[in-house]
Length: 416
Image (tube, rainbow, N blue to C red; front, side, top):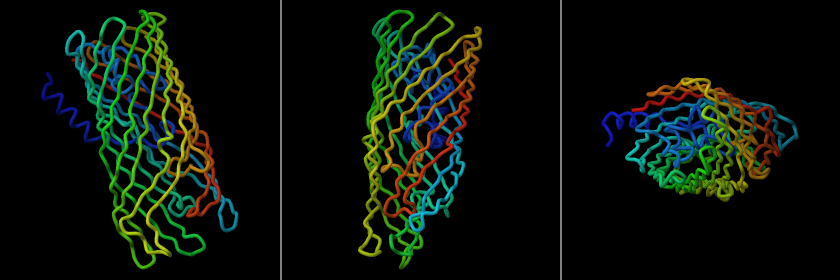
């Protein structure tokens, strides 16, 4: 059923998967899974003959004819500034993030088994982020380097029941690699030291989707993606700790939330269509980021771990996208998306220091019988975020502003 060539290609793209910078969607979610998807603001649930449907809407891989392989890469470059009020003297410090661009990869393979059944497999990032600030800044007491590497491998089975109904179910093998670096300020003490926490984990999840076509012009779809909970073993290193550097193992949980997506597709004619999309993510499952040390740090009465309440709220992402065929070979696309902010004042931090987001994007696709090539440009306008200082932070309050991200995407699909 599958040629050796196809498995070789999938193995190579699996080896180069990496996370996007912290600017794609609210929280640490990523939905930049293909250049076409970015071009349509993420409203890409009903694309014809697109292998990336594995990511956007698995039930729509029934729209792929024959066999297709697709590879995509989306470049995201975030920029932002902050103000922070010092606890000790009330002075205001201003600064900006270290520009740490990242890539969101997407790799997909779909094969039509017969008139009713399809199989697909995807490798892409559903969650991930990178943020960095100067190590001698006031905000380094909260976080000066944060990274979540995320990758999802999703084998998928889809079936077309009749001309109206299709559905899909898939497993998710999810990888999470977490690294956090910060400075620790002991209250009412001159003690300051740096820490690094680094660990990785594999966990399982699943997804399901269904499409219903009212007629030749109107279609409705829904996708559910399950929560994935990682129980992570990590290495903790404390540098400059009184009495000597402190190295130990640590344990914690990272919860990647479940979500529902619903989409509507309308074809005006054979050349023009529009999609509406809403995605509800249960960010309330990210209630804390707690890490327990196997060997407590011997400072004062002892520090048994790092505990940080989050208490994020659930939130929606809304998107609209349109595509128009200029000719048999060229299609233009455009999109807009709005992400609600789910991060409260007392649960905010400099790991994810951004608020609500508006995405504007345009794209162009070339296509023939054997291949498609797409290019996308986008801009994410990101609201600021108010951040409450906690006990070990050197600031009493902080805020981010002038946040934005530049986006560039490219996708290539080959049909066999």
